Amino acid sequence: MSVISMVDVELAGKRVLIREDLNVPVADGKVSSDARIRAALPTIRAALAANAAVMLVSHLGRPTEGQPEEKYSLQPVADRLTELLEIDVALVSNWIDGVDISPGSVVLLENVRFLAGEKACDEALSRKMAALCDVFVMDAFGTAHRAQASTYGIAEYAPIACAGPLLVAELAALAKALTNPAKPIVAIVGGSKVSTKLTVLDALADIVDSLIVGGGIANTFIAAAGYGVGNSLYEADMLDIARGLAEKKEGRADIPLPSDVIVADEFSADSEARHKPVEAVSADELILDIGPDTAAQFAKILAGAGTIIWNGPVGVFEFDQFGDGTRVIAEAIANSDAFSVAGGGDTLAAIDKYGVADRISYISTGGGAFLEFVEGKKLPAVEMLERRAAG
Ligand code: ADP
Ligand code: MG
Image (cartoon, helix red, strand yellow):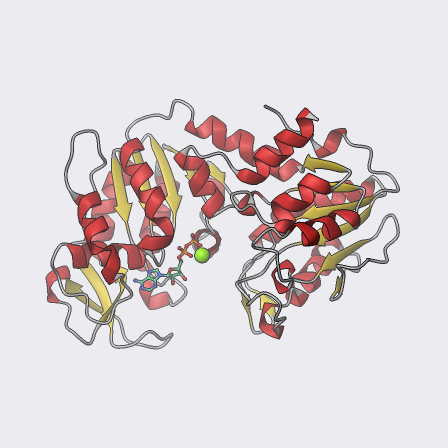
């Protein structure tokens, strides 16, 4: 089934509401990695060039619904958009009952997760959002796996619902990457929690040849193998599941365990990094990165890959002393001849930090959606666009 594409819709003089994924890292009131904002620019420029009255909607972080909080405000994003687009992008705080805007201009609507009912895809809220526009454009691939008011409900009730150029491009590129992938296929799944990436790990274990785990996820596998992980981030209730995944079975991916790690006494920007064999972590230490031997071993696996799928940093790369594992992985992917796809908010930040963006075959703006696509799942927001296209 296909979707209506924004480029085929008449936008002149129309009120166009675009669901973007502008969920970017913010530090000290400033956007610290603007990759997702830059990815959204061509769509916004196209709508403005068509003389549409443009409203941008996005979430940022995980605020408690119905409780607006300064630290989750999109103001830093509005500031960055103003710089990048070189036109004033005002932030509209109270928008659900109506937005005052004229053709050829653009506003950013405040964090959609401040509205009660967004996540539950409340029908009344969805209808109110839909009433704001003539055309709804879904361009947030990164949220397409969630059936929420601003990704799914609004598409059901808007007069016209279509896919933006970024969404169209992402769906096409990923489909291309994952149809008949060159072997061996290596996936790297890092980040903080097994629980949030469990179905992905399970599905990838069936698809890929080697499944490299890192970060808090690796800590859970290390604990599952019987080693102490001290005060590390890990999930005690996921140990059996990790054991099941790690079990060697015919047709299932090999999951190599880190042999050495980088530990510290506390989770902080200035804590001292120490190198240890994986079996020597003491009760009061935290594992914050994979060690150099492990990184070199993983790099070797990546060098031999035909296809690489990357989501999740393998350490706390935000702190330089715990970033070497992620840097070595990023460079190994960049140096490999494999077709490589990467996705995830923090993964994008790591790609930026280590300057490898132009040597990765395709960088998806999505995290969870990227992974669900990789798993072969249908994305609900895309299904809704297909339904609307079918009439
Ligand atoms: P992505 O956004 O790319 O999907 P995640 O959000 O799952 O990635 O995870 C990224 C976060 O995981 C980073 O903020 C990083 O600091 C954290 N992380 C990585 N390794 C560890 C670790 N060993 N202990 C605690 N946090 C970790
Ligand atoms: Mg993240």
